[in-house]
Image (cartoon, rainbow, N blue to C red; front, side, top):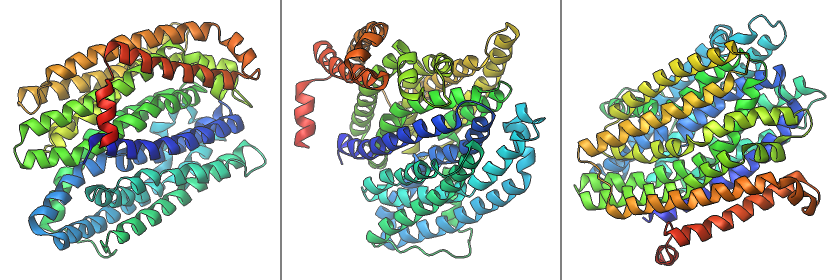
Length: 517
């Protein structure tokens, strides 16, 4: 399978989902603004986002796919089907149990995640209620992840990549239900759980079309389930370090009114390249890496990793340059409307800048981790992920309260800590792959990375200049900041292609080869 083809399939569906998600967020921020109600809702939405990213965007699948593919090759389709069915039953039992426990313990959980509002008699109970409504999404996402893993193992990436669009469609419609922001927040929470059920139904249909018949029943802890669990639990923790860091940051942000909303708004922009590139490349290269590892084909393994890293960085580093060069331009143009003001945009831009230089690291984690997962080593990435969580927690808390003691907002310190922790994770992953002789980058990749950095630096300089004259550009773009920002983004994208060809980050032969494949 072509890494580029599967990446494009995943990215195309993800792009469509993110466009819908972007429209959804424009409406939600306009309806809720940045304040206590928005903070309560974004706390409730944190759980669906966490489990969507941990499960649906590859963490569970990266651990399950190699085991499923190995069983398929060694024992046949029926054995692989039984493995999926047994894992499905066990996963459903565990996640439903977690949902029930969380529903009961939610008031105490909120003391950790939303502690800054603990003395607020209105908005603290609202956060509890909204999160209880959204919690069933956990179980739905676990099932969706397993079903996606079955489809991905068969080389079917489209349906699993397209399923998340249902969440955005449901939430976009729900945002218009309610007379005030309290009612709207409740409608949105209900929509999250409804969307989870619809995603599972769609993926179940997709798996059935592959003639894989799965049945829900009483769980049994078989040797195969134990083996999958031994891989999946550490693998899921390993791939979710960044998401845990976001949860930690959100918990700290509750001590600063509005900070959760500003961090959420920044998250919506910097997560775009992560979802379009990092997750897509990671999912696309994993089956190929797993086959190369079983065949002890080091050349194919290195070539796959080189292709994955080169493609990811060619698309991600320019995105990082754009976010750092013009953070306020994009936030203000896209999000400032309704109850979300230009002052909110300026504060969001502070966080977005610091998330920007972490974006390449967020993506590299997704691309480097499959180098371990393909060899069924999920514990090493898990350990590094936990180290990053500790770094993020200690550094984030330190910076947050230090900045507040200086009389300024503390939430930018949380963005700094998240990006720093991600780069530490990348360094640990890469150094270990190299030390074990599982991956040594080729000279062509190193040359390409230098070219990408040069092209991205030129792009950053151009966007910084265009941001300075964005008011004039908007006057000629239907007198709209939104349209002006779109024009600047399109000019930047076209300019990057030119810079990339000039500096050699993209070669014409690569494009022709990709089109032929």
